[in-house]
Image (tube, rainbow, N blue to C red):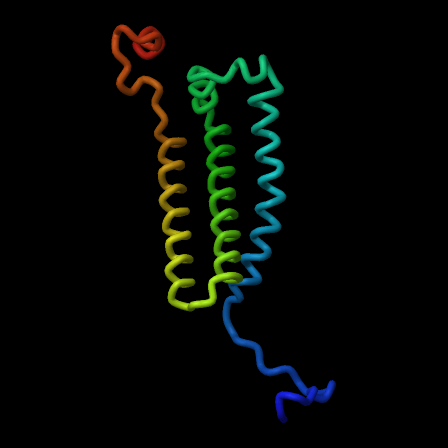
Length: 148
């Protein structure tokens, strides 16, 4: 068959590649994480900005109080993980769409995932190991709370 002819409608499709379809699962992840992120982000904004005194209440003590609860650690950790993987997958899609050279594309995709993994690691460490009393001295306003 030449390039100028159209295949017969009854011509069978070529056999599909076996194995995991990463593009399909990336697409599914983007939709599912997007819905979850909307719920997580609006919940985060509601608690931080609407309840209580609004933006005036947000200070170091507010963060200390929030991260004392495992619920908020999981909430913010889930939001961090979903948002960074969602963003990295979106950047990967843009790179795949617009970068035509294979080697450059592979390098850029690797850099995107390495940076996302590094930021996830740092963010998770901050959320899980947050200690408000670390480095507090006797002249700090937190001294009484940390020595109690």
